[in-house]
Image (tube, rainbow, N blue to C red; front, side, top):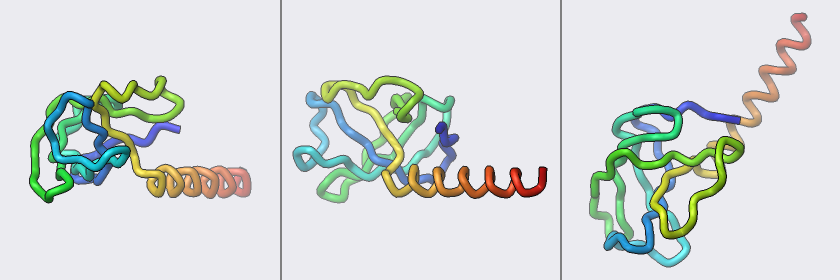
Length: 102
């Protein structure tokens, strides 16, 4: 299921292993989508583990089912598990409503 990224949404950002962003090992950073280029490319305001903000442009936006998950050496953003869970629930309810009205 593909969820369209939109400006203002909060997502996870996984920095590549070469970036100097303050991150805790194995944990993503919080980020806000500041611009959307496509379903798989966004600009972000990333908040590091110290609370400092950083801009990242043209970041790969990974969505399960659309592509393979990037390697740890490659920076990317993705939806939080809660967001994908909510989208799945919404999609299921919409399908049930459509089945009842058909």
